[in-house]
Image (cartoon, rainbow, N blue to C red; front, side, top):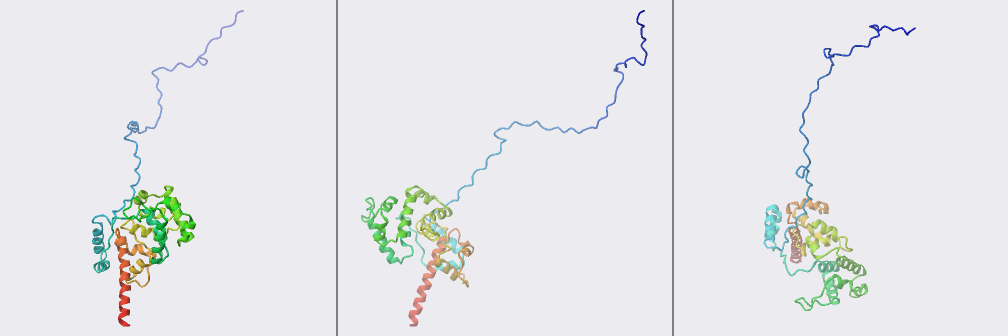
Length: 289
């Protein structure tokens, strides 16, 4: 008997395939499409430039430069009426451009003169020069060669023999060694601004702020140096402005701000002011005796 044939019912029939006529609705939320410009490729013009380093502070012309002292006096007269009176009654300073001692020679001389009466320092300085070889290129036949090499060639015992203390001898050798090693040089000293010069020179044994200030004013003729720690300048400022107390070094910058950029000349007049007061006091004492 054959296998009976099973009839296909409608329930068992597969679902009819979807036809194009039937459509299904798909719900969606509309979105706002923002169009953006296409990214531009990076180029040399779009890369932000690297900021240039800050320029080095400019060094003002030396007071020995033509016309600079006249400019300083004009500024101080206009900026400070009280100082203007001192300027009017005092002979003007002179800052001679040449001849000027080289930086090393000037600093060595400053060390020798520290804490000594002028007459004693003069005698020791003369003996110091006599120890050094003569400068054949100098106009003065007796001029000595004050160079780092010449000073380093002198033994500490040689320096002590002419009245230089052992401590000052070590100061001279330290200064000479720094110049010989290239830490300091004539061109670099001339090119440094005041703040850098103070930092570098005070690294030398025996050279402090006061010595550097005097070197900058009287050797380099820098126009804007205020020796805040100098007693004579402080006393001059006290007298000029009729202050009850001696101004402290940290107060000097504010008191003398109006002198800038010619603080060196203002300080010079403070020394002359105190000298004139001392002279006037002596005359008054002689007249009453």
